[in-house]
Image (cartoon, rainbow, N blue to C red; front, side, top):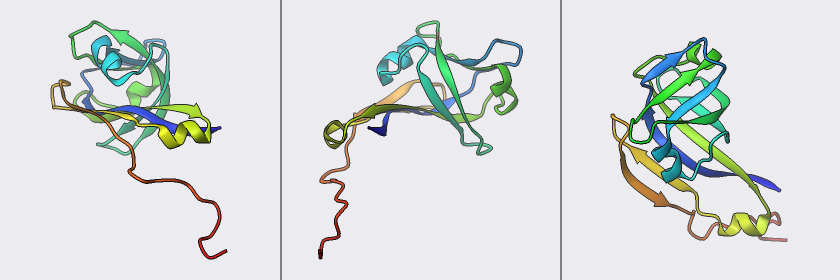
Length: 133
């Protein structure tokens, strides 16, 4: 099984940070749905402003609110206004990976989606054998 990039929200603007919440990242349910990211799914959060990377899980925010709240200890790694990338991964077989097209949701500065694509690397196929063998 390979762990592959499944989807991402790129970039989001952090609207809140709640240090004493139990933990996780709250994201507007509409944005999760567009990206194909499930409630309670494990995600990686990459902070563009300071370079921090962390893993957490998603919880749904109010649909249409454009809320992005870092909760618990992650709130120490992210300030309100920081730009972050939220990335989900999926395990799949080699055959599934060869056909996989990740969902990319590009965002504006107010957490509105501006472009949604399902991309693949055209013609990519892993070949573990050297071409001259």
